[in-house]
Image 1: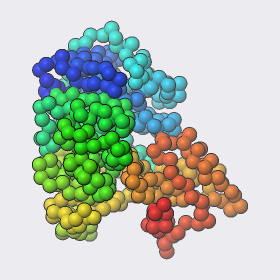
Image 2 (image 1 turned 180 degrees about the vertical axis):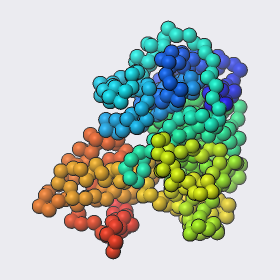
Image 3 (image 1 turned 90 degrees about the horizontal axis):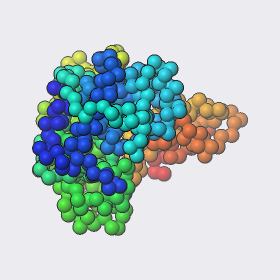
Image 4 (image 1 turned 60 degrees about the horizontal axis):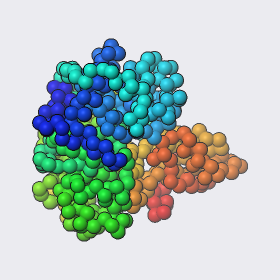
Length: 507
């Protein structure tokens, strides 16, 4: 079934009811949502694109951006969201690799996005502003606000999410209508979405958490969303008494706790706080419960699988653990080709209807990432049960203990050291570099670069950071850049990043 049809089954019968309330006082009804989605879908259909065409979108968060996603599904095409922080070199790679038939960008970026798109053979470039401006809206304004949903099977491709690899080459995770639809239904039931729930939405909508977990949940439940463009502590506190559900990265909860006006009274109507996309510190978990009386529900997922594991809604929520496998999802922990016992660390592998179809145009890489018996290798290390700083963990609860691929998660965003190292190593006067993640109370992890200058060269850390800000997304830019005469290596010549983390992690 087309995912749009599945989501639409949850829309309320009262189409005049509010579907989205924005931070600046706009109200979109469910009828507005359906009509705008139909207009955009008719625009895409009218372009007579080949079946399976990709629609690449790099725009600021707005209700219209969500309607464009729904329109892409309704018209039967493949949605390709891109982080708004990506710069020219990054966007160029994604466009060249995915070969989208349509690119939609922010008006302010049109001057440099359009040439990239045209060089890759894309004939249709539209703009969409966060203030309801742009050529996309003017182009579909005269079109019909009614249209049928294009039939799609569960196995048909619905979206491609690019997730970087340790080699520095980004991989496009292909997610089907069935992957996304089944996971949305499981989460609706597992988190006990209820009639009258209101979602407080402050996440970006270019990745799994904000789009496929938060938005899908509200749409499938017919729930109103209070729509904030970004993390704004004062705005969260202002709207929280009118909300019942909030999803965020640990940074959200750290910032809320820093505000003295965030009290138990603020959260009086809240039913559920969900945290994910980065590890939640036990200190934050405990402090939030003490301040509000609410226990944050932590879960675990990734671009290739959407959600896999969650602390239960009705049962105990354990600090330091991501919970139990979701219904229909199988999780195993293995080391040395055998299943691990309780409190034994190994590689986390998963399978289920939510697991992706593979990497776009990378069949060999896809084959590498699955075991011979069909389990996806997440690259994360974990264990069942054991102890955390919060206390004992039940034996059927999963704990994530590390990442086998040196992935850094900073503020909920994935940062892959090899990619950053490649940019630094290309800089004038740099001999080599190593990028690590170190604990950070606000971001979960902070990116730190250790750089070796070439002989007789003096480098300026501040200037290097400023240069990186012009080349890569801000969340990838190191918070600190440390100059050293050499990097520690083992007998095989491999850089010992564990030594670097021990040396610089405390800072």
